[in-house]
Amino acid sequence: MIDAGLKASEAQERFFVLNSRGLLLEGMPDVGPAQKPFLQPRDTISSWTLREPGAVELFDVVVNARPTALIGVSGQPGAFTESIVREMARHVERPAIMPLSNPSSRSEATPEQLLTWTAGRALIGTGSPFPPISYGERSFVVAQTNNSYVFPGVGLGVIASGARRVTDGMFMAAALALADLSPTKRAANAPLLPAINDLRDVAAAVARNVARQAQKERVADDLDPVTLDTRIREMMWRPEYRLYQRTRAPTEVRSTWSR
Image (tube, rainbow, N blue to C red; front, side, top):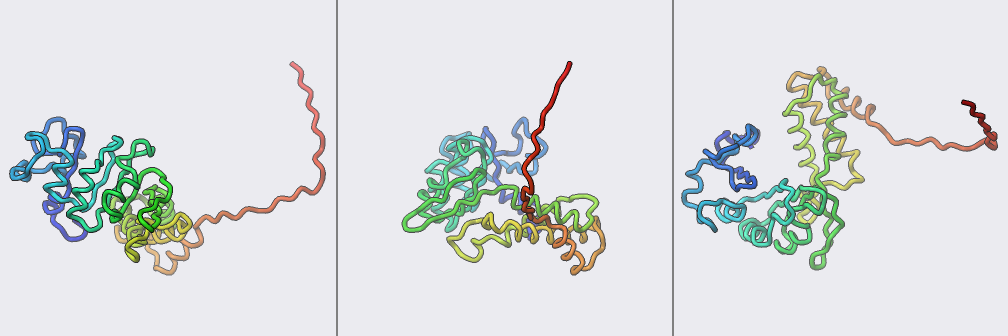
């Protein structure tokens, strides 16, 4: 969000992070360094209506903050309850809901539940593989947010550009490249992520973005765009298997062991 033009304080206002004790708020004990940038000021919730006074749970956040995206990495099956999801869908036309915990038995909600509770409007990304599901007369392919969409392209971009280190900016460039390839951008009912069969094209697009970002940050070779694209194309691994044919009968092998 900061890269898109928001001030750090404005971006912080749009992220509501919860742990097992509820919403992360300023003054909470035992807050880790990675959590500190996401602490919400207590003034934020001063006017909120809470289901249970003194506890700010996920349902309370959805009711009061009206998030457009819900991401689960809790490992707690069923954490995205029907009441939470239905409340979110009341305020968002296309709620993005990503139960990323795996295996599937730990998923915060199943894709079938999410489609039912949002009347087929949810954009779903899961951490585990789920089979296609049907809602009404439509069939939906469930997008699994697997690292195979990004990591091959990151590695290829690093090698092709001669990058000397991998930066946060390069990972952001990889994410933006993948987002631009989302089928949902072109058709509302399409999956959130490209098909597995398109992973080679995805890797090439990610590599190109990563390599150019590495050049921009001056941690890679200074190559012109044509040379860079040629390197990416030539360095991409291709699964070409040779056909082996037996030309004569195998020789009998005998072994003698002595100790």
